[in-house]
Length: 321
Ligand code: BTN
Figure 1 (cartoon, protein in one colour):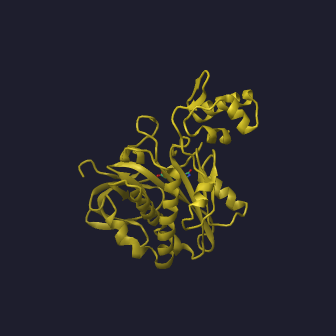
Figure 2 (cartoon, protein in one colour):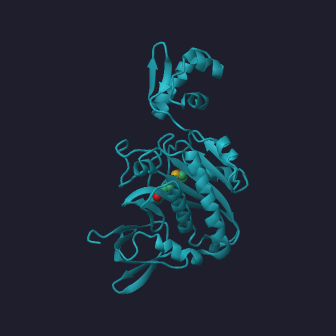
Figure 3 (cartoon, helix red, strand yellow):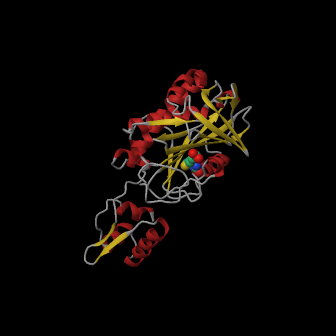
């Protein structure tokens, strides 16, 4: 189906005959694939007698050859999948099959995209970025301290480099614009964190999806396109993200999180704000002080500073904050 989509991605008309000839299949087989594109990917296709078929709107698909040809550093191998349950799950499967890290898995669509705290990450076809980078971690647990926050910084720089203004971070690693979520990060470990392990850095960015198109997201959200007023080339975004990640991960590897703490806090949208931390069934009210050198949240609760860390925690602003 992907070769057919590549032919149609320009949004122009293509006759059934020309598509069949390019793909080496019959017109009937082209027709079958077109129906599958519509049904499985939700891509509307227009058919006009005498002119052929065209996509309702043009697409720019992720392209391994464009990404490899960009020549930009780092030279992490990038694999683009058409559809997968979750790029993080696929990355973990590839690790089990001994694929050497680092490598990046991208997909045009996720059928079971995962968010933090057991949530679903809505992942429509060819609209957004679903990105998983796998790294080998050799320095033990210390190399993991603050890692997800550092990934947030790199992501923020990549998003800003594409022209989005007003973006900032929310502990532990959401990227927001005007209180709306633009991107999220999900780190997963494989192996022994005290020794040699691998970390899968999963990043989801709402790129070209437009609010209104999807009602199924259970929190306020935005996209790069909504913020910029124009569509974004996802291949360019991947190159920028790779570049920023390689810079920040290298700094983190050499210097640890404490050297990046100030920078993280200066980009933290909720510094000094009154907030409520949810930890399981518990709700803790306090004022956000920042983070410590391990990336744990510093919250002033009844005049006493307390530290919180862990993947199951979530923070929201108090209504009067
Ligand atoms: C969050 O809840 O904010 C984290 C969202 C992370 C989503 C990304 S999309 C690519 C990777 N694969 C997944 O299944 N999840 C992450």
